[in-house]
Image 1: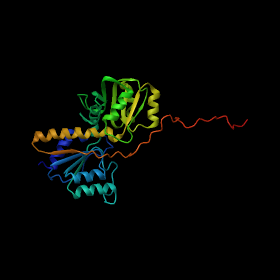
Image 2: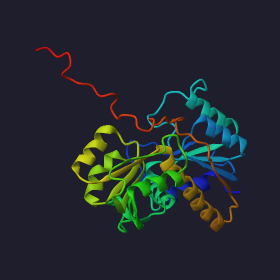
Image 3: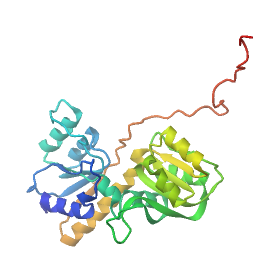
Image 4: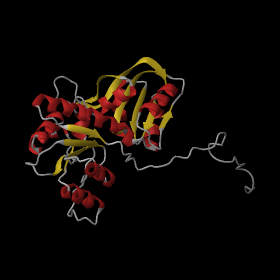
Length: 293
C-alpha cells in the first residue's frame, strides 16, 4: 500500500494547491505522512457524522471539499465540535485532506461534475483561469443544453438528478423559457453574476442565491435562475474525485479502495411549501380604510 505522503502528492497533482483562493484553507489537516493508506473516503463536509462514517468504514484517508478550519483556530480541544472531529480521526489513524477552491478551478473540477450530473455539456469555464494556456480551468462552466429544455423542465431535471436535499430546486423566470445555454457553478455562485451576464447564457444554476443579488440579476435582463442546495451541487464532485484518484491508483498499482459518503450533511432538514392557492403576500387590505381625512 502507498504511504500517505505519496497519495497526498497525487491529490496535489489533481487539484494543485496554488489554484486555491488566497483566503482558502486547503491541504492536509491531520495525518502521519508515513502511514499506509488502503481505503479513501470522499465527502463534502468534515463534520462529526462523516468522521464517524470514516471510522465505521475503515478509511485511512478522508478527503473533503469543505475545509475544517477555514478561518484558523487556537485550539483543537475535543470539547469543540471541530476539535472532536480531529480527535476522532487521529485516534483512529485517519488522515484528513481538503480540496476546496483548488478543486473548483481544476480541470475537471466541481462544476464539471455538476454539469455531468445534470446531463449538460460543458463548453468552457465561466471565469477562465488566466494562468491556463488551454483555457479549460476556472470557476464555473458554460454548458450546452442538448436538446433544449424549458426552464420548468430543467428545474425538474435538476431536482430529480441532484442529490436530494430539503430545499429542492428554486427557479426564477418564465417556466416555458427555452434554455439552450446554461451556466453552472457548484456551491455559492451569486458573486459571478457579472460573468454570467457577459456569457449571454439563458439560465444560471448555482446555490445559496440571496434575495438582492438574485433580484438585481433578474432586473438586468431575461436571465433565468435555478437555485439548488449548496451540498447537492458539490456532492457530485466526490464521485468524480474518487474516479480520478482510482485512475492514479491503478497506474501506480496501489490497489486503493474508495468510497463516497452519501451522508446528507446539508444543514436544512425540512421544507414547507405554501398551500396551493395561498396568496403570495397574505390577505389583501384596503390601505385607505381608517385613513385620516
